[in-house]
Length: 322
Ligand code: NAP
Image 1 (cartoon, rainbow, N blue to C red):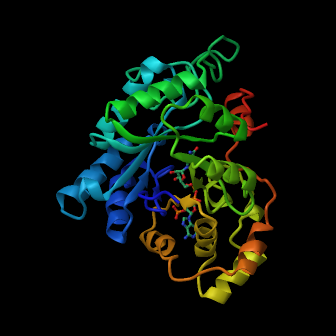
Image 2 (image 1 turned 30 degrees about the vertical axis):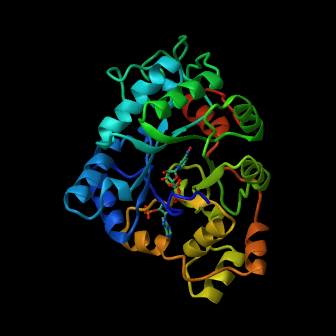
C-alpha cells in the first residue's frame, strides 16, 4: 500500500459533466480525500470546481487531498507532456498533482488542445472512412521518451509522483531499466474475474504500489455494452456467502477483497449512499478461506481492452496486452 495515498479513492470516469462538481463535494463530505481524474474523462473542469468549492467552504485543504490525473495518449511526444499536464492542472484549479500517470502505453498522433479536447481516441472523427486519418492514428513515440518528460514534471514541481496505467510485465521490466525517477504506482484493471496475480507480484517486487481500477468488475461496463449481465460479480456464490457472513453488501466484499490483497481502489459512483457504502469496508476482515474462494473466481476476463473496444468502436486493431 502506498504510504500517503488514501487506499480508497473516488473514481471520476463516466461521471456526467453536469453532476461532477456536486459529486466531488458530496464525496468529500462522505470522507473521500483521494480523487482519480484524467484528461480523458472530460470532466476535469467540473472536478476542479468541486474541489475548489470544498476548499473554499473549509471542508478540506489542498494538503488534505490526493489528486491523480493522467496523460492522454495524444500527448506522449515529449514536447506535449508538460502542455497536457498544465492543462489538467488549470482545469483542476491546482498548482500540483499528487500523482500523474501515463494513461495507456499507446502513443497517438497529437491533436492540439484548441482543435479538440479531450481528443479521445481519434485523430480526426470527421475523416473519410477510407482516408489516411480514419480510425486511430498511431504516433512513433517510444515510451522511454514520454517517461523522461514525465520525470521533468517532477523536477519542475508540477507533480509529486509519476506512474503508469495498463502496463504489462514486460513494459514494467523495461521501464525499470531506464527510469531515473521510479514509478510509484501501477494502475490496472483488477477484480476477482481478473486477479492479475503475477503482474501485482512483479510490481511489489519492484516496490511499485498497485491501484485496482474497475474493482467492481463488470458493473462499469454494462452501460458501454462491454459486459453481459451474467458477468456481474455481485451475485457470485463466494461473494454472496462472504457478504452474508459479514453483514456487508457484495460490493463491499469486492472492495474489501481488493484492499486486503494489498491494492488501493478507486470505486466510482454518483449515488451518495453508495459513496458511503464503498468507504465503509474497514470494520470487517475476510477470512483466508473467503479470500481464496473469491480469488478462485479468476477467469482472466478483461473488460477494458483496447484490443477489443478500439476495433469495435473505431475500426482500429490495437491490442496492448497480447
Ligand atoms: P467501478 O468503480 O468498479 O464501478 C462503477 C460502477 O459500479 C458504476 O456503474 C456504479 O454505478 C456502480 N457502483 C458503484 N458502487 C456500487 C455499489 N456499492 N453497489 C453496486 N454498484 C455500484 O468501475 P470504474 O468506474 O470503471 O473504475 C473505477 C475508476 O477507475 C474509474 O472511475 C476511473 O477513475 C478509474 N479507471 C481507470 C482506468 C485506466 O485506464 N487507468 C480505466 C477504467 C477506470 P453508479 O454510479 O450508478 O453507482
